[in-house]
Length: 295
Ligand SMILES: [Zn+2]
Image 1 (cartoon, rainbow, N blue to C red):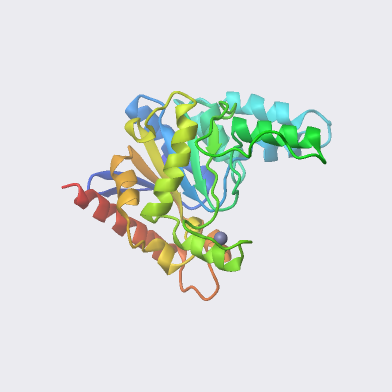
Image 2 (cartoon, rainbow, N blue to C red; image 1 turned 30 degrees about the vertical axis):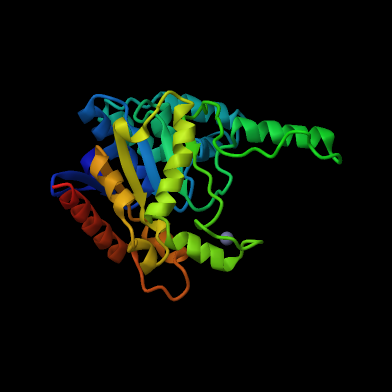
């Protein structure tokens, strides 16, 4: 097995595009991109899930089951063994990574600098310093109300040890339903790459990135990573205003795609005639359009 055997490569009008079926194999192209650009790129990922499990924890849990040793400590020690300059080391790592552990593996081994996750499954994301202070005071004063005001954006963030920022979201942009309901889920999913939604996500991401010395995320080298299971409908893959998505494509050092066909099938909205093949074709078309837009 070679690294190149883990992914397909496409040159779309001069843009490097790497495609894997299972998301954790993406470590291979990420390491190759990192070698090529000679710097540690950031990651902007668009995914249904957060994909932020600790690298090798699944493997470590099985390894330590009988001995009772500390699985977390073993997982961290294994992360430190990844050498991104060594193909064999990467193959060793990919063989032992489980679902959702690839981002942590990459940020812990200097393949990626910071990761920013645009996703649909965790509304809270990384809690801000202000939010943590508010929650701490609320608990201390319970049942009295907290004296601190409920925090409003812009907010500030600690530097996460794993270098991963999960970006928060409220609901679909402009949603005024209270409480939010099942219609919100569809409306929200349908706008995953719409200009208004991505602009809001990137503004939240900028509040995070500024706290770790990255004033302009898009001005530094980044990989744009797309998991096709982020798209739950035909509407979601065909945004009415794709400008921000196209800018992210154009400015990316490279694009990586996980097709995750089973997750696409499982997560798509009811009666949507979509599948991973169709979404993949549409994404390639978007990349073509984005690249041509700049000429
Ligand atoms: Zn809503």
